[in-house]
Figure 1 (cartoon, rainbow, N blue to C red):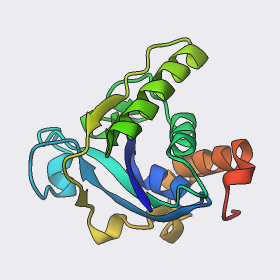
Figure 2: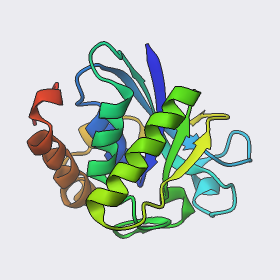
Figure 3: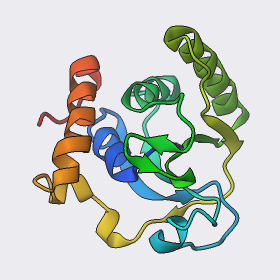
Length: 176
């Protein structure tokens, strides 16, 4: 098994998508990329901890590769907008890849260049070494699956999950 740590806006969104990917064993929402140990959601929302909302993904590389995870990552969020995804604004919503090895770093660098060419814009995704992951509070776990009728889920998460299902049908493990 391998681990990937990615931030692409609200972790409710990224968790909902990556939970539906074949080869993904677990997805945990949390905080990473900052300097404050054991931050709370409220602290992260102050924009003062340096942390981003991220998901930590444990995956089987014989089923899904890190490169394929990054392809999904870049397709389900806007990597060209700093500190924002849609109406979610703040540094905690920034696009960030926290690499766990030099190989992950190399692949991420290649994917950033690929998406800059594909999108015709500068990709602002931060690429930094992984240091620590702080798991989010329990109420953030499986938020989408527990609250599908919540307006945010309907308006923001549903389209991302549907986009993933449409664009990556061979990678999807669960249909909605």
